Amino acid sequence: MSMTVISADVLVIGGGQAALRAAIEARRQGAKVVMVSKGKIGAGGSSAISDAVHSAILTDGDSVEIFYQDILRGGKQINKPELARALAEDCTSRVEELQREYQVDLHFEKELVTPGHSFPRRCYHASSAGIAITRQLRVYAERIGVEFYEKTAVVDLLASSGDPNRSGSSGGIADSDGRIAGALGVVASGGVGQVGETEGEPVIFIAGSTIVATGGFGRLYTHSDNPADVSGEMIGIAWRHGAELQDMEFVQFYPYRLVEPVNIDLFTKLFAKGAVMRNDKGIRFLEHYPQKELETRDIVCQEMYLQGKVLLDVLQVSAQDLQAVSPRLDSLLKKGYGGELVMQPVEHYSMGGISIDEYGRTSKKGLYACGECTGGVHGANRFGGGALTEALVFGARAGSTAVAEALSPSTHQIAHIVKEAKERWANFYSNTGFPADGQELPVKVRKRVQELMWEKVGIERTEQGLQEACDELDALADTVRDSLPLLDLVQVARIAARSALARKESRGAHRMPEYPGERDEWRGNLIVRGEEIYFHSTHDRPSPMNG
Image (cartoon, rainbow, N blue to C red; front, side):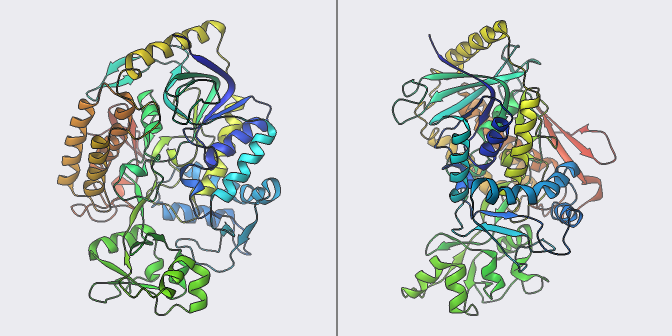
């Protein structure tokens, strides 16, 4: 069968802030850059629906070193130091660039309200809407010549050599040592794609370098504030092609979420202005903590989990502050609502993902990554204002490195890539039940994965629960082994559960009552290479874990 072939110096997979910043940097350096996204670029992903909060060093007395130490302390000392330092060093120039280069109007807070920071660093758009920033980045990217291919879902990576072979109990596909040289996509719903193909037809993207910037795996959980399409498939695809993953056991839950009578994200500033959390007995259960409701997210979520039902009390918040800080909540109360305001943590951010160095390189040649799909920047927990800043910093770094190291495939290699893509499509995608129109993956399997992750790989984990999750996810992986798009999703959940089971301590966002507290022998990272999980500390070489 014939397939449309798109060539580029740099291919960027994703449509959010990290992807846009990577594409912009690559294009600025003269590369032909193609972005491919299953949604509308600049309007999808977590960054577009975020509160638009960034971090920058703008206060007298603050410094790169102080911010760097804050990041390490927040990550419980297992961040990759070179990544944490890169974030601290580049954050201010990248945030200021939003105003200077992209005409984004930012507000810089002067009071300290973000937990974990030693100085005020919070910068945000006045609308508190992330799309106000990603929209501007999109406009700039289009203006300088970045090519967009939207409503096109990437279902696999392509290598310049090496044939796919079955390996592992999970039925993954293992590449040889071939360099990543592009991706295989499929036109999603919405009629004829920009590539001229009709809905459900495959598209081949060939590139000298490929950057993954597709976000985390939040929608593998029942309760998450992530968009529906953020479920980690590209992390699974990268792993399937030999890329190392790390810190997959660390998943952040966001505590400041109102769930009854309506869903509202609450800013930490509301609690700085007098709001408190109480249990169903009326007790302020965070009273004994120095920062009370403004402790770091891992602590607040854990305490909320232990309480069961958590109620929001805003009696001490002035009418002026309530209107300014949380207008939706203010409107609800002004309409006469007098019932309970129930809060519940939701999955918010994945600290783990594809392992990268400080320039966005993965362990796989030709493959780069940036943003929430990566691991190592935040360690065991992330501060507020870190995710979007990370997207800018490492998007720019990955884009620059990808251009410098791009290797255009030869005519012979291109012929091999096209042949491989057609074989993969015929063998693994055309008749596997993959929803080529881009709609939801099979509901039953996805729902069960979400239930397992929420109930057994959630805020508090037990050894028994994690083992049960691993066993069932192993079985699910075997069940869906003939449908790679579905298998990639299950594999990410499976790796997160296995990593959580392997870490015998409680650190940051990972809590196990059988192993309370941080343990010095676990000060390090779990690295996933194929089916093996290795522990890497600052003192020892990586060693394989049992199980």
